Image (cartoon, rainbow, N blue to C red; front, side, top):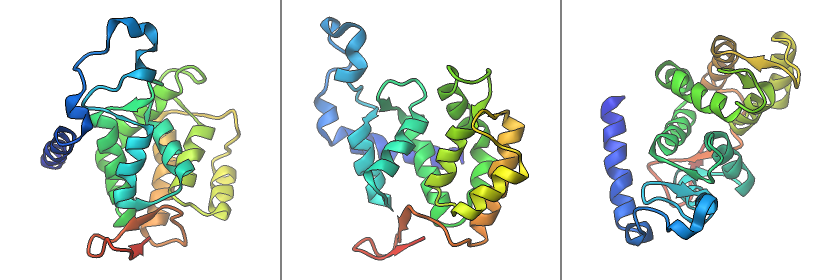
Length: 202
């Protein structure tokens, strides 16, 4: 995974170096004050619409799905994603497309959970993630309604439930195993690498 991260970082930085971000200043103008996240994006980060365009290179998804994934990863509420969050999003999409979500959890669940939990710090206990936030992730993965209902019943989830890392992993593993086996899911369709002209696979 370390080699994969390094390769992705090199590709990501090459793409940014060739785009408009390369001409942006390295730091925000002082007169922007506390509003700088809304008016300035560092050269190694992506705002909402840039992330949406990147996501659509690899997946067929609606604007709302792309924005929901952006919001899940924007744990500091700055309106932009840095390299770690973008990398995590690409790993998730790749794992969904090749039905290796369980492997994604094995390698990245701790980092991914910390991102989600940090985004819940104002509405949940430290190192916990709310069930509604987890449910947003589950729906983005394309889990059918009947399976979501079964998960809620089996694990006793309510809108007020807060999940520790162990609780989250238990739920996520059940979802990932079902998706990897080929459940009738995937509202986000991952573009087939062998034919980017239009063919997609779930």
